[in-house]
Image (cartoon, rainbow over all chains, first blue to last red):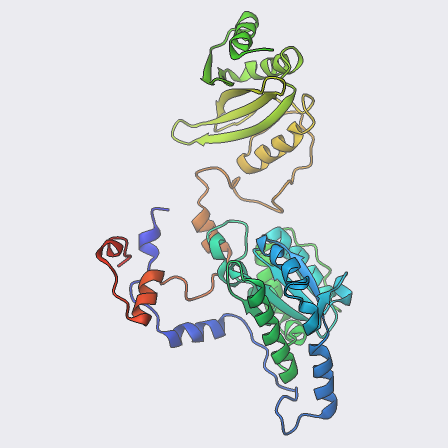
Length: 215
Length: 187
């Protein structure tokens, strides 16, 4: 802990540098091959996206303290079902995987298995500052610091904890992305599987996943 | 109805030990490693301390010892006894007491994983909370958490500049900071 002072960098990076670094940080899915602008958007695609955005089956993976906000969001006070968001029982029935809070390396392994079992199109909403940069666990030996190194993330909801209003705002953003055809990173995950696998194997020591990813 | 005095009398009649009273319902015993098991068994079977509250470990790095603390409880009079013992830090080894209380097993598994304390004859599964851990037990004080984190995990850029939140807000809003706040400034 005595090294805290040495680590600080005096010259602060500019906003542009930080933005660029975050872009370089993990692969992003470009919307190449998808139809996403108004002129060429086919009616079928439009209707598909419209239907998907209004029927989000949510698999809430309650890992950390954030799980306590999910009941409040889904029940009568904030009533997420009026936006078409409701719970799903199993990964194979779900559209949205919601990671609420910090992830220990042990939990990360299960999350990856759950994510790989979900069927396309699948979306990931990461919840709370722990999934963004480690949050208050930034120097913990057993929690990961950035979720998008391990699985692709569509929407981050910042806050510690984000209130149900913020959660609904995050879902509104996700619906917007779905409507524009920019959400759903299952393809991106398959394409960059080597990169993701390398990152995953770096923190998961007892690696016993099946060799082939064929979902 | 028993008081702390009665407990200490009963213990000193049976064992060669020193006891002191921390509060009116709390007794502390500092024992040799070999005395712990008989004393705990005596407390449980003869004096009615039927409940094991907690087992914890303190890492005294400077003295090169681990201090184990067993806390037992007598529900009738709400009496607590802290049984403390010091064990060698280089080769930490403690008597296996899983037969005394069933949940002692959980505590021993935790101590074995987090501090590397060995319990001869203890046959619980090796892994408890951590999975595939191949470093030094992480709760030891000489385990360098920060170095481990930097070597294992990737942190998102933008955090290392360590902005002071208060100053960042004032820079944006043009608010004047009072003098007593500047004392805590990071610059």
